[in-house]
Length: 95
Image (tube, rainbow, N blue to C red; front, side):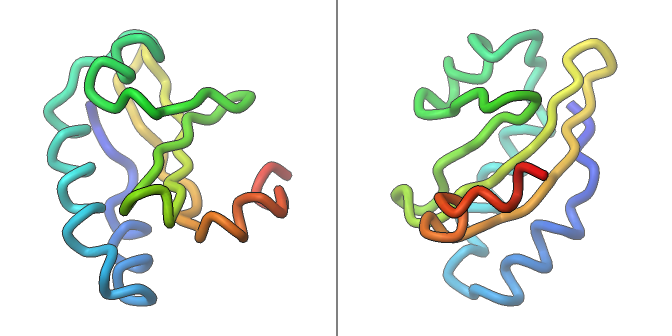
């Protein structure tokens, strides 16, 4: 998979230093993956959820949420916000 863009992950780790290792691990797994469906994603990340057009990953023991948009046909993952669980629950990221 082609992850677009790692820059957002790095920006999140700049804001929250304790995210560096979990987001780096997610990135390394995702860029080597060959996902064709949410079911494929869940083979590696069982807690991944489909929310509309997005896939949401629990990061760092469900303390943070990584929101991405996956185009399975092109093999691209578009990184959207990395939010705290509380910010995610407010739902403003959906718009």
